[in-house]
Image: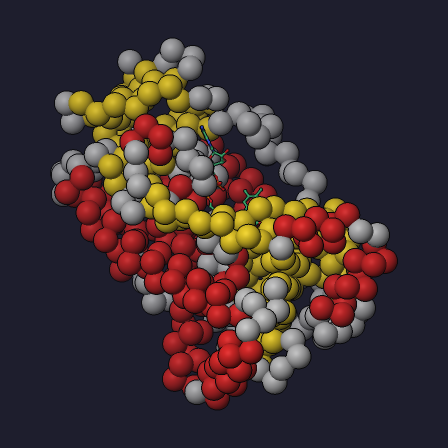
Length: 405
Ligand SMILES: Cc1cc2nc3c(=O)[nH]c(=O)nc-3n(C[C@H](O)[C@H](O)[C@H](O)COP(=O)(O)OP(=O)(O)OC[C@H]3O[C@@H](n4cnc5c(N)ncnc54)[C@H](O)[C@@H]3O)c2cc1C
């Protein structure tokens, strides 16, 4: 039976980020990687057909700078945006964030990254760390805890012992079933339609979000001034319809739904529909197992905070493990990890709550609601105090771990 100080279960962006942050401590780390995604240890992970983009905020930027890979991220077609416009269709409610930021380009509102490219970059980086071992395995068959150790067994008859298991295996984490962590989950009754689009009018490094009665259309600006990624939250039926409809009709609907703000839009490449599910783990630690990223929480992409929240989980956990290890304490003991749980639950809950309030306030055609959010948008747009707080929150600088400041 092999022993590792830490076993990271799942090699997504968050699991790999935790591994990056544990270098230089003398801790032996094992990453369990599912072979569901086609991989080859000597080359990068092969990209899927549809390009997926997410937002990284300046707090996540600090983490990647700390790993020494930020300049590489900027070199993989990452774009920067300084402004975000949010409005409601058929109403006067309109809000603009970040109009002053152009004057200070070192503090943008966020960066638009291609998920697969950042994932590949992290994978290349982690493979070269000499304290990290990779195990490709399809299925874990058991998790148990005894004698201050956790034991993981695999289908291939391998048993691994460790001081700490980090569950970074995403939504529907298979480790949940072994440790029975209570999970609150809900259905948004919306799917998201993802596509890359060409715009007639240049986006001017601005992200857009427009609310309709029963849908939300978001636009993330890419490096080319006429290219962007759309994330369209719709009823499952409408999403499937729009994904399957002709290009001409889709482009027409898209342009109109953006109030022709970006002129005539043309979808480029494939359109993809993904279901939306929210979940929140009531506990982040069970014995010697700790949850990070999507295994702990998923939410509506409305505020585009999911990836950033996961990265702050990683940052907080890295800080805690470093601190415990330097003090010669047990890195896997429940009591020693409680601070991680407290801090991350607080931040996650706040973000989840704001996302839910935002989402539920804007969805639906209730007249009272409509008057409320019209006034809300106009009021927030005029109040500099609230606006600058929301701006700081979007940039992720409020709940950043102390060691990263
Ligand atoms: C290709 C790609 C596309 C993305 N698209 C979007 C998007 O459209 N919108 C958006 O907001 N974010 C997107 N993201 C970002 C992603 O959702 C974030 O990374 C997310 O915030 C959480 O990441 P995670 O590492 O916690 O979970 P995940 O990214 O889900 O990673 C979990 C990892 O665990 C692995 N795993 C699962 N089960 C097992 C098992 N039994 N054994 C071993 N490993 C296992 C999975 O293969 C995966 O590699 C994408 C990421 C990638 C890599």
